[in-house]
Image 1 (tube, rainbow, N blue to C red):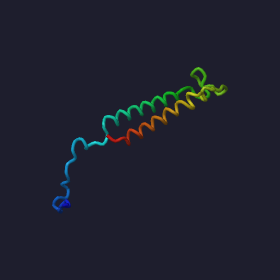
Image 2: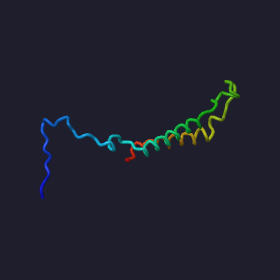
Image 3: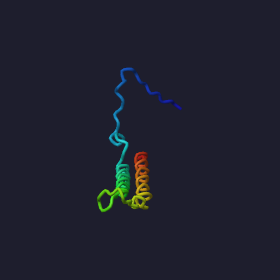
Image 4: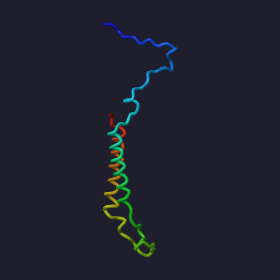
Length: 98
């Protein structure tokens, strides 16, 4: 058995081998697809959270009224779930290998 020895000299410093085009960028097409899917989930989640605030009636601020719509299932449970799922998909997209 012969052991391969890499001979490196000081004159070779800074002349490292060039990266091949396939290894030049970490993200592939699948990564970007998953990132767009995650971004869509986040945007949909924030859109589901939108709506009138607690003191808005028919589009006008009224301090004497109360809008129970701020506690709807859509705004309290579903929308944040979409945002969290979107962020989880983003983490998966970043960590996924080619």
